[in-house]
Length: 435
Ligand code: DLL
Image (cartoon, rainbow, N blue to C red; front, top):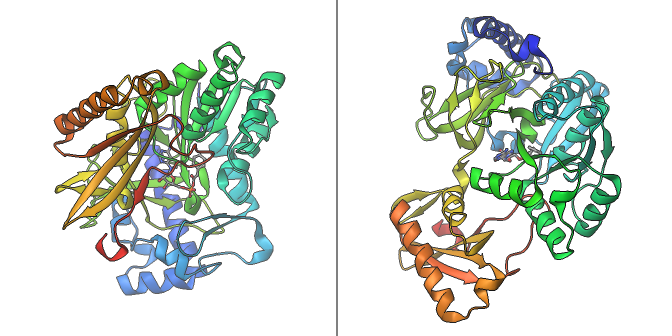
């Protein structure tokens, strides 16, 4: 049974009616409160009262990361600061950070969305939740913290890092739930194995992983190493953090909290709306947020939406696992390549560890992809001939499945820096002007 079946199982028609009502309210709210939107709507020749159906969303202009940067820090804030009770921000690898202000109601809604995520993962009040998402400006730490508290779980706010201590506390406190990025879960599992701690024998039962792309093969790897069920969380700072979408026991897509977020898929180049089932860029319009609502925000995440009857009873639309980000897409020998495709193929090779990095270089006019993947210790130690053979095997596997030629380097165990948060998968060594 879902946490909030009134909304999570709402018949589709009623849900869409609810979304339309909230969409109209949001559009009216931002056009009154945010000069940026007022101007954009005017330029697009659209008034709030023109939104008569959900399809009319396509008439609204979209919002993107550069808009948030241009309006940094509070240009898109729709409430006076005295109503803001929290400000999160994304660290952002380049340029200014993205700010995320919340009113008290926004925080309560965020918590509700995250409680649904926990509940769906089978977490209950008697669980001990070790929260290894980073605390601070990142939305992972407090986002998971406040929902686990609301659910009356015992929260252990370890934050990320200090891996050995994570393992000691996990053992001593008997944590039953771990929240972290999937790559950090793998780091914990690896360190535990080195310390001869068998995580499979601990009470740990469930993990809620997210904040970065990971394949189903990676999910299985983590489940196997930790002896847990690996569930998922999806979200982004601009829309308030995790809690936008979560998976259920069916584990074949993430239900979007549709009473709070209106999702669309568009062609990332032409911006044409795409039908259910087709892969494209995911856009979100927030439906109930007040401090910083977003209209058709371009997430840059590539996925598809499906609306089929789900075994769990939820009626919320499902998004597929994020395939990649438009800005992580590489073009190798004319073929579009996403890191997740390479990850899937690498994890099918038994001789390697699930630790890899993609290095992109220029060779003449062409982009060259170097796949660095760690060999398993016992395999790596068999010597250079064996390593060469495995590199050839990986190369053939990638060529056979994707039709591209890459250079494979089987690197020694521990060559690749371990992640404590979001893993760095792509190292782009091309000159900036040639990317
Ligand atoms: O990563 C919020 C979050 C925290 C989500 C904890 C889940 C768990 P940002 O740092 O703003 O926010 O990064 C957002 O991360 O656009 C995706 O590209 C990626 N991402 C988040 N969740 C997933 C996921 C948080 N489950 C960006 N699968 C998003 C794939 C994800 N990518």
